[in-house]
Length: 324
Length: 288
Image (cartoon, rainbow over all chains, first blue to last red; front, side, top):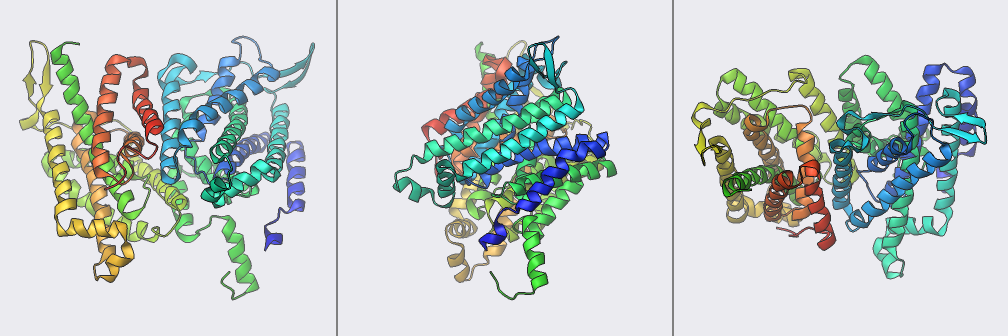
């Protein structure tokens, strides 16, 4: 069975190849859409570390995404492009610090409490930005100049340039993926997996479970911050909606629909979600109704998410009578 | 703050807290008894408010609208439990989160298709539209007192239902051991269905009652849902009594928060929650 679950390396490399040459062939519209999908894939993979690998169902992950986006706004100078050297670390650090503080509270709870408490804390952050003039209040705020990367006088990268931006996103997507793969093989990754399958046993074996969970939570928050930074750069505009609970719900949806605990699944979920969103919103202004219907149908008819679909089809084709 | 203002704020806090209790008690009952986490609970509140608006416009009377709305929402709850939720009892919380998230999106769009996205007001019935003069300049609307009164009556009724009736006994037994109750020949499926319908009706009723004061607007359900989560987290999951105490605490924190630190009024409720989490991560009251 383990061979079937193992990462299909060929498929991964093929995807990477397609992604890296896509802007040469695809139209601007599709390149931009793909950029958005890759950003969401980073976001979804960061949540998968919590939901899929540690068993922590967070319904407030948009908080860290949004905090990083606001950090870009707050760090960027008004009339000049900001430096990537400064903004990216600042955004990720802001998200990580927020995850650390919120983690201290929410990780004291478990199960259904955890779902509700993460949602509530994310909503609290939402109100911080919604009610205070810090980031333009409920109207949001523009980022006048996109960050750039300079060495001395020469400009190496301009994130306002669509092609530059595309490859920066791709690079960060690959980096996030590789980082998470390495992390999952590290002692920390194994400890998180142990916590997922049996927290009490880990505790009685003497593992500092709380610290491990906090570490996982901070890392996931920081990676969500990478996605939030990119999202702010893509749209050049940040509103409190970026950390609304819809955002948290959507990213959770991507992870679950794609199949938890696989990383690849989170990316596939992000792809499916963004594409569905595009298709539905082109059809009707009530596209959320269609989205809701799809979600309800998947839960009712496909327990186990979209990823279980391939197994079902395979079982049908092979015709094996084994019940697992 | 002089005494009259204080009194008015106190009454507002109680009224808000009691209303929250109605919504949150449904949420906590459904979770405590059936183990279902229901994100769509706020949508039922929204549904109730919009029913009050639409039915009051149609019938010309809020009370008739509320009666019709109660029947309608109980029916909706009954059908939803039968069609969707009854299939989710054995599933993971994650599936429940997903399903109810999908339902929120659907309900919100159905609302938008039928009524549109405008904000609407609902008229306070003639006989309750007066105000009580408290001082030369300050007065308190009778309708808000009426709301608080109704909520208190319902809270007492609910306590009586759960603690002192045969049905309540079966509900409590069903929450601790479903199979055992079933093998005693009690139709537990029907009881679950009733509890779910009751929870939905409580939320919808709260929405109907609040409609004349808060007016009806898109997204109103989600706001209430999240505050209700805070109520449940503070009060303890599954504890109706805990929900009562927590809802009142939140009413006080929110109302006086607005007076004392108006700039960050939205935050006080969450700060209260954070404090309770540090003190008792599982809520003030555990169960019952």
